[in-house]
Image 1 (cartoon, rainbow, N blue to C red):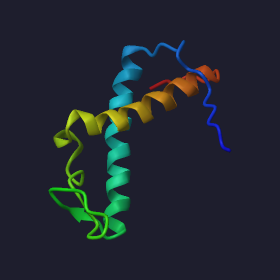
Image 2 (image 1 turned 90 degrees about the horizontal axis):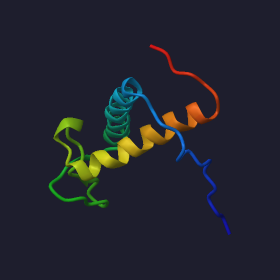
Image 3 (image 1 turned 90 degrees about the vertical axis):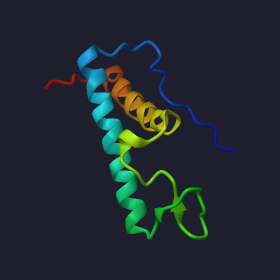
Image 4 (image 1 turned 135 degrees about the vertical axis):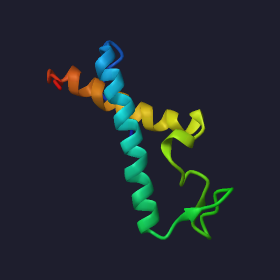
Length: 92
């Protein structure tokens, strides 16, 4: 049985400028996801319906409820924390 074992990044603290980058990455994550959904034939719908390929999340990132933005933010933050944990630096 598969047991996920992500690298622990709880000790990593990101600077304010990297936190700003995280929000840009979050928005882009949504844009990439939406592009893929649209390419697969999905469209906006008030309720998610897998058979009709409709989802209420095919809207601009800024209009998403915070609960949906949270997933994109966690993905971006976990990625940035892992980069730092592995010894890489991020410079503008």
